[in-house]
Image (cartoon, rainbow, N blue to C red; front, side, top):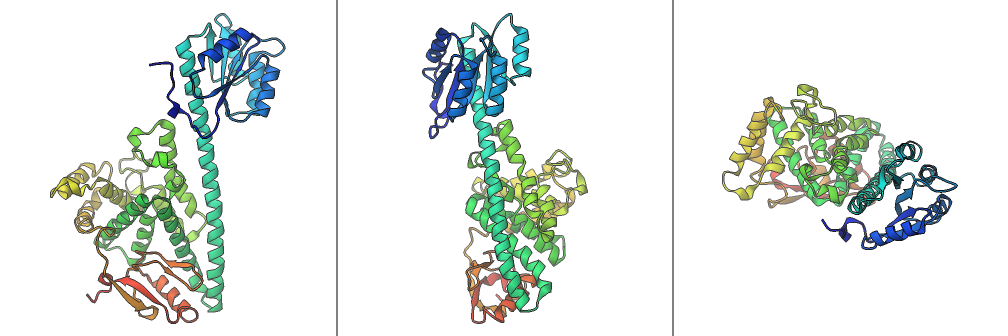
Length: 442
């Protein structure tokens, strides 16, 4: 390995600095010479007091390298004060070989992350500084993501409240209080699905496929219609927690992620459940989302549930997600056969063996013509002619521009009744497009 650090290791859009503090000018000169080829600026101070002034007045300092033995203020004392000013900055102490007590003091008092012995090893010091800056940047990125998710949640709440208030007012005008709860739930689900589609089309496509597979399995299991509708909504939203994960992590498999990246990625089921927590109608969907990465033998996450302790919806979504991710149609005519073998290998370990039959039937039916690949034949209907079970083929907005139904939504009794109430006032002459194959009349 050479002394030259790749410039791609650190971002180029914002300045990044390290601060070297030592009361000996020749030491500072040697450090500047050592770091001259590195992709960051080296700032120097000859005392702890001067170092603190630089920390107060300069942005972008990611690492501090301080000598221990300095007059007036020791390295441990300086790092203790520095930690209060810039707690996320990586801190390294330089100390003489014989000063073991001083090194311990710098860790206990100053929160030093590392200590190195003088005279330093050139290569060791370079690598330690690079690793320290990488850690600093990772902390900053995690904080940025947390702020982004918090802002996203706040904006979502505002949008939900605005649309909920408008819908509540319209329903109250028609004296249909019993429809309010279901309509609010439908609105939240539509908005979250729309945000998922806008954030990442690949995630949206995966969610649509998983929903189709889950729905097919629910039909085979002869589950009641209301439960099938909830399962479909849960499948559409199962990866909603990934909205807060960076594109850099989304593009990786878990096998190639670092420990911090893996922890960030594996937080998405709990994050997704949290988005549902504010609406009582979506609590069941929230549990599906939280547990869709649980394994039947208890080796999954986030809670390590086993067997039937895992909600049925989560077990179905886990199966459907595996099927969609593992299916490679380009592999030839036996692609589905290979997939059934993979499924069989996972039964009892990863998947509920009681669902094997439904899963195999679903993959044979649904994977023949995924909804995003097939040609949809539409028919335009008046609102009054809609029926339960029909699938909407285009986004449908009311006269105020509010999205009422997302493409791919299957009409259920609650949506149908809501449409009828709207029709009495503002949708009298409107039409809607549905998939002809879902009409049941050929």
